[in-house]
Image 1 (cartoon, helix red, strand yellow):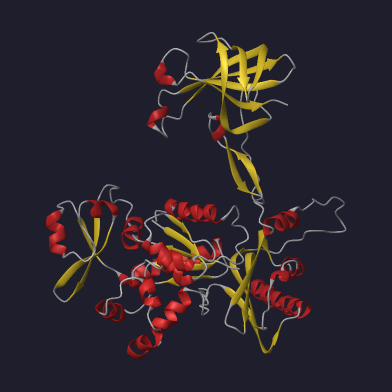
Image 2 (image 1 turned 135 degrees about the vertical axis):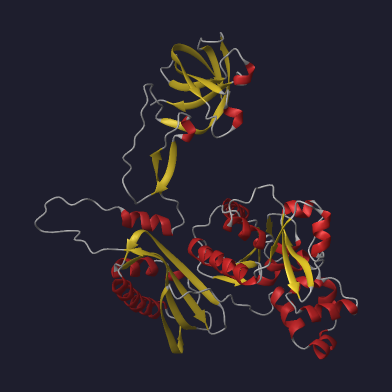
Length: 503
C-alpha cells in the first residue's frame, strides 16, 4: 500500500531570505514581520531569534526591544509561495511522480513510484532531510498511511524525521491538537470554546451535532486523516513540462489494453520532444482510477532519449504493478526531466566497428532501484577523498591519479583499527592483529607520509598519517597507516589502521 510523505519547512521565510542574500552573516538573527494596518507582528523567526526569546505573534516593537541585533524583514507571501512551488517542482523531479504543494509551508508526496528510494522508510526520510539541509532549508519529514496524519506529525513532533508505522495512525495522532486537522481557524476556535483540545477527543464525539453546527468539514477531515475517505494528491504541473494524456469513456483494466494505450502515449510524447529538440531523462505514467485514487510509475534513463521502442519497453516491463481496481479512466504521460538532444547517426554500413552502448543495461538496473554510477579521481592526497561518484553515463574524465607510491586494489570506505607492535617513529610493525587474526610481517615498505587538508578543517592543520605496504608470511599484502608522526601527540593518536588490500 502506498504511503504518504509530508515535508514541513518551519523556517521557509527565513531560509528563503538567507538563500536570496548570502551576504547575511550566519549568526545574524532574522525575524519576518507581517503587518495589517498599523499592527506589526513576527510571522517567522529563525533559530537564533527564537533562542533569544522571539516567538511567532510577538509585536514587532517588543521583538526589536528584546534583541537589539535582530534583523527585521517585511514578509513577502508571494515570494514564499513561489519558493515553495520551486521546491515542489524539484522534489517532483527527484523523488516521486506524485508531489503537490501543501500550503503555506510544506509539500506532500505519494511514495508510489519512488522505486529509487530504497533502504527502508527511516533511511529514505533521513536522505530527504539531509538533501534539503544541504540546500539551506530546514525540513521535518514524516511518513504515514494518510496525508492528514503525515501532515500533522511533521508539524507536531519536534524531530527531523517521523515514521508512523502502517496501521497505527490513531495512536500517533489522537493526542495532537485539533489545529493540525487543516480546518479553518474559525472552526478551530469554536471547537476550543466547546472544550475540544485533541484530535482524539474530537473523533470520539458524536458526529451529528458537529455536522449540524460546523457542516461536513470536521467529519471530512477526520475521515481523511484516519483513511476512511480517500484524499488524492493532485500532482503539481507547470507549463514547461511536456505532458500527453488519454481519457476513456469506458474504464479500462486489462493489461493488454493498458500497454496498448501506453505505447500510443509514448509515440505522442516522443513527437512533442522531437518538435522541441529535447530528450527525456525521467518520465512518469500517472494512472487515474474511477474511485479517485492515483497510481504512478516512473521510468528513468541514464541519458536523454526519445526512442519510442525503448521507452515503451521500460513502461511495459512495469505495468504489471498497476492495480486497476474498478477501472482506469485516464492515463497521463509526463516528461518531468528533459534535456536538449541533437540528432546523430549511431550506426552505418560504412563503419565496421561500432561502440557497444551499455546505456540500456544501466537503464534496466536504474529502474529496478539499483544505484548505478562510476568512480572518478579527485585531487586529494587523503586516500578516501581521492574518489567521487559520478553519473554512469556522461563526459569522459580526463584527469587521473598521480602517485609515486603504489595504491591497493581494494580501498576500504573507512579505515579499520588494528593492533600493531612497532618501533616508533619510523619503523613498520613487526606484528599486526586485524579482525582477530594475527599476522607476522615479513616485508614492509614505507613510510609514505600523507598530510591533512588544513584548508578544509582546522583539526587537520597538524594531522599526518604514515602509510606502509606490508607483506605477511602467506604473501598477502596490506596497506596500513599510523595516525600521527610517532612523536608529537598533536599530529594524531598514534593508533594503527588497515586501509586497503593489494591483489
